[in-house]
Length: 446
Image (cartoon, rainbow, N blue to C red; front, side):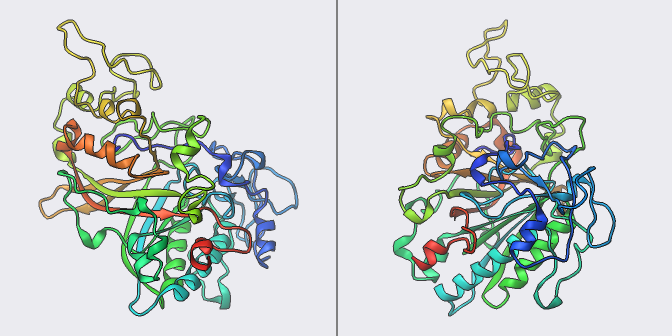
């Protein structure tokens, strides 16, 4: 598996559907007019514009005064561009896959309650999809006035919500015959120390936003939607660098201090779609435009890692810590020269360096789109930090993406001494919902 040293901030991809030109118009489409949002191209670098597609974000616009980079929200004052940026819920692919990384994230898994099945699951996905569409447009007015009020003075803040199905979902709903072969249980790996209570699940949700309150508000709203149908199985919280925190956009660093995500596949590459998304006419047909996500909670043994000398840390990874460049020279995006040796005849990038083992050209072309979050859940009983990576990777087929790479890592990755895989899940994430429809509709009604 592409472990903690390879997360990334993938570029926007037009395949996610058109970006919103107006959160206000999105609200009007759903019968909501309480909010008025105004924004312009953000200094964060996240704004892509309507022509670029919903892999990026567009600033919410009330259609009023035309734009100076701020806007009014419910009479509460101006919104900065970070708050006004909005993503589209509808599109070929679900949001949150190729969308730019957000500062805050929540992952949650639910199990259907006993005795409930396909009908109740379909009702839940309808409610969830409607809630996600409304909140992503920046509206926080819940039906019946029962909203928590947490995000009343916030904009959409680049909120995305993504839904997936676990292996057990198909048994609970009587849809075993439509379960994808790609959802076969992941093999066991020697580095696994998995807590089953925090692994797998019938339903999976990924929430991302650039405002922590907006992200929490979405999590709470979706949990309330599910109350009578599904119970929470596990939930995890993550974070990344905030937009605008650096002078110019940069590849993020993980909690080991490594620049992380340099070699992520890019939507501009000719084979990106076939690597990441299930094609039209693929098997099963209801997964067209969808993807498969592997989720791993990976604890970093930071106390041990931080005792290593800088040169030893760099040898474990195969890249310089300062700028992410390969040890063979150049800059962050320079080609790694795997055969280069030093004056003593030793490989400059060691055989067991993480960056060497995980390269697609060293794994038969296997590639994954990594879109993770860091996490810190306090301290363990022995005083060590309970911190690391919520590893999230996307691929058209995990049997050809995640599994072969993780097997190779399992056999000799130098990084494995400093990490522990403590939770795991594999989920089928169908394509995006059509306007007026809901995620998973073809599966549940087909």
